[in-house]
Amino acid sequence: MEEVAPATTRRGLLASVSAVTVSSLAGCSERFWSRAENVGPDQVSLTIKTVPADDDVAAATIMSRLRENFREAGIAVTHEPVPKPDIYRDVLLEGDYDVFVLRHPGLDDYDGLRELLHSDFVSELGWQNPFRFSDLTADDLLEQQRLTTGDDRREVVAELIEYLGETAPYTTVAFPTRIGGRRDALDVDRPPRCSIEYLDLMSRQLDEGPREGPLEVGVFGEGMAERLNPISVDYDGIDGLLGLLYDPLARRVDERLLPEDEDTDERDSTYVPWLAEEIAWDDSSDQLRAEVTLREGLEWHDGESLDANDVVFTMRLLQDTSMGEIEDGLPAPRYRSRQTVIETVDVLDSRTVRLSFGETVRPVAERVFSLPVLPEHVWGPRTNVVADHRTEVLTSDNENPVGSGLFELETVGMDEIVLEPFSDHVFRDEDADRPDVIEDFSQFSGIRFQINPNVGSMLDSLLEGDIDVTGDNVPPGNADAITGHDEVSAISTPTDSFYLIGYNHHHSELGNPRFRVILSRLIDRSHVVSDVFDGFADAATSPGSLVGLSESEFDVDADIPILEFPGSDGELDVELVRSLFQDAGYRYEDGSLLG
Image (cartoon, rainbow, N blue to C red; front, top):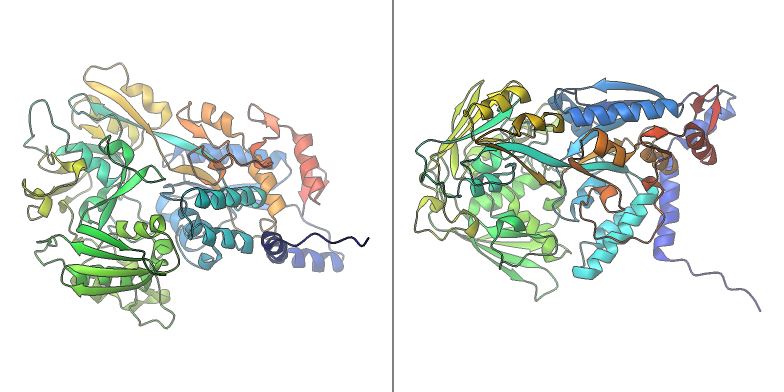
């Protein structure tokens, strides 16, 4: 009886094609021609970029551990510390790196993986595929998860996670706990980071009643308000500041800030209408649609009316910041993946907008509503093309932001940023139908961000009573400074943000998935959490967490080698590591790893 060859699955076919694609990108041709010319291979050489310890001690320490382990593995490695604004330019805008260690702000949905990895974004800017990763199988699964919901979607994501464990386009190290401090007069158990957390904090009733003065928030660093562009990828200012100035159609609110009887979606969060009074979904036809009705009486900070035209303008501007002046368009690099689900956006009347989406499901489409709405009369004149094929929309520092948020900018100085109440905001009316999360807003007259030169001076300000709460993360090594004091308490909360090691796939060796998988094993994640974070973090030790999904829901039944550190207690087993590289086709000479 003639044997029948096993059927070729779609994934198997795609994987084989991807393997060919990856190989072509992995520098194989360069190695082939160099060997053909009888030129001996060179030692594998890599440069790691991260921020200095003064900017982020955890990132700098992870880099240091990684550098030493790479060296022990025989790799010629150098370290290049780059200040925060510059490293965002090098990594997210110019792709000028081999390996980087940075803190990612976190994924708000499974679809966040699409903007990180889809080949559609391989030549774009920002957190849209900064790795230059191109893989047909990954693309296929990233598209599939947009078409399903519930358990079906989770199955697709689980398959994607398994595949990424085999290819390691990047790897996650840990999810840090956000640490902060507060004066005990404040009823808050988590340090604020995003705008909705500040608004929630300012809605908590005080024992002494509403305060006539502002909420005093301590931050530290330099150039905190040099760039107030809400769609810029290299913004390095105060977390949550721009979200207080610019309102979206709906805000994503963590379930911990919602009433106990409020339903939440599959990602333990929900979108609460904000500028929108109502969002009506229509999925009765083949195309998903949403009709958005704006609240009455919306205004911009300069007194101009906010209407449906501003919403449509914003959506179109983010899709093409030149508004048709550049032939192929020039999309805003921030929020890029969210824009791609929109097919059309139209004004129905002054308060009503209809959005039509491409092939997708509601949990993916609703992310669009969290985009900051921009005033057409301010940003329309900025669509002109400037140097380097960029528009003023992308290059503007936006020194005098005009938003529609509950606060407007009053003062920007070297040592403070002051936000004053926007008295004409619809939610300032006590009779307004406010979202539950800000039902008792506001217990303060404004917000003052006190800018300190370093974390130590920020904590001194807290202990001396000059600030109410810290707005910047307190490194674990400084946490003891705010414990054991009267009237001051340490507060903390888990976060979705994560430290990752990113690889530039255009590097001759880093295009090889087997090489990346081994590199990804050369950091002891559990040891990093105990030794670097003093336990104030969760190690990425599950398949889902390796790609940045902090929840431990994915029980992927697969062998994920990245989870196995070749050593113990942070110490590398050098012989084992060398055998791993040799099994992958590399060789050693005098202790040097040769490509």
